[in-house]
Amino acid sequence: MARPAPLSAAASPGAPMAKADTDRRLMRRALRLAARGAGRASPNPMVGAVIVQGGQVVAEGYHRGPGTAHAEIVALEWAGAKACGAFMYLTLEPCTHYGRTPPCAPRVAAAGLARVVIASEDPNPRVSGGGIAALRQAGVEVEVGLLREDENHLNEAYRKHITTARPFVTLKLALSLDGKIATRTGQSRWITGERARRIVHRLRARSDAVMVGVGTVLADDPELTARGVRAARQPLRVVADSQARTPPAAKIIHASDRPALIAVTAQAPDERLRGLRAAGAEVAVLPERDGRVDLDALLDELGRREVASLLVEGGGKLAGSLIEQELVDKAVFFIAPKIIGGAGAPTAVAGRGVAEVADARRLRDVRCRRSGEDFMIVGYL
Image (cartoon, rainbow, N blue to C red; front, side, top):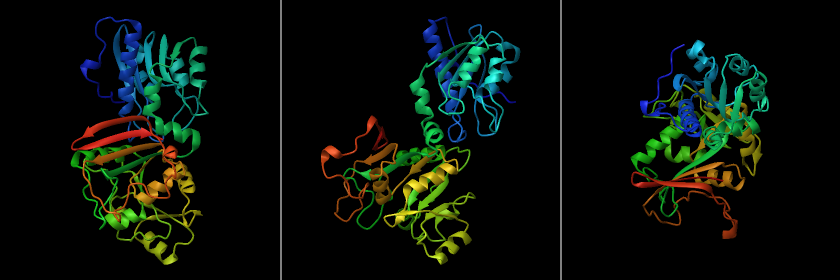
């Protein structure tokens, strides 16, 4: 097995430091390794492992994707005999069940490691706590919880999916200072600048699926592919389209070899469904809610398809429905310092809205930074 590309020399352990500082430094190294699996590891978690012998890093690994060796196995195979008596820094506890690969905990327990430092327990009910117990029963010193919050944030999509069987939903919107996502004539290109658009393509590359409402398809004819970034695979493209109004010639259907998924209701005309299927799209007929695709049913369907992370890019009606039904986990808003104006210009979040300001949905853990000429605001609902 090829050795993973090493991290920068700056990340390597230097002069002797306090044990706690050394542990944190090496766990951060393992977390950076784990992040290399973004857009590749799903529906598995992103995991990194570092093995240290005599104060020196002798092996490291990360999980590259379903069916490939897990991070700790990659590191152990590279370390070989040097694993005996060594310390391992592992971002997630080793698994104990057979999946696409054999369980990792027995391999780690039998490697002769003196100490294993684990950032967090695995939320998977088939694993949680079992891997840690297996190591301790084998006489390995195990410490759990170092940089736990960092690991939990890194694998927020995996944690949502493995415990609810639904994807982690991120709502991305690009809007003007006055909350518009298009002009009164429907023009929306481009409200935000080039740097913001590059970030959006990276978000797509790291997501299992990207979804819009049919209104966005009809107005903008988007591709919804990740472009200009290195991506292991293109995300599944999804359209919430109760009446199957997506044109068979739409770019979203033909932009990738991977078939787009058009979510419709039983009220969609058969001839439109035949046209979409003939064009290469996949059609999912789902229950309806208030005349539209039931978004709960759609998220269940995506979960069954092993979609752990879903990026929603609009439009306003879809965003409003998701927020009103409390189905959004994370919001990423790009705000351009522009004023579009106009009562007829579409707003970023439609729907009924709240009656009282006190009832407004608040974000937590909010971060704000410049993105070129625009502002990027990220928070959790």
